[in-house]
Image (cartoon, rainbow, N blue to C red; front, side):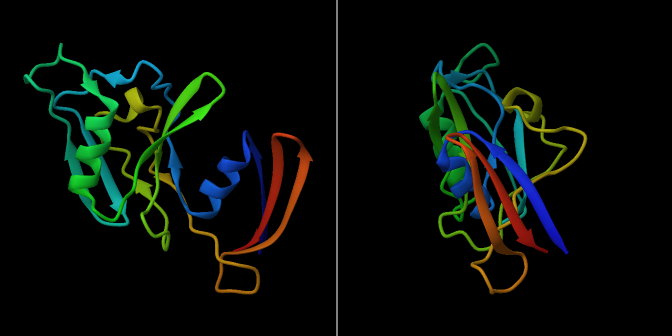
Length: 155
């Protein structure tokens, strides 16, 4: 079955889509987040839970984004999370170090709403294979304008 998806934003968003990444909706431009003792749960590429810890411990202590990224990588070594600038907004991208299956964030993580992720449904990124490969695979990419694309896949 053919499926089309409209992707708005810089070209990197299309590349992250192909790689099965999950892009958090929150703006992390402050460079820190108050996430002590909150959890981020993954179903893909591995079932794992990250419980964020501030130093010194406490809910009123912000955690630098470099530490957030480090704590995610420690809990899920198959991930290579990064911050990406979109205009004046910094987004946290959860992507596999070697994209193969996509990232799925469990809806039950207690940090989900703070990170701009759903707490009512799992947030799934699906790895897209090259044209003619195993499904799902890329059929067509069309640029609508400088920052809007239509991606068609066979699934």
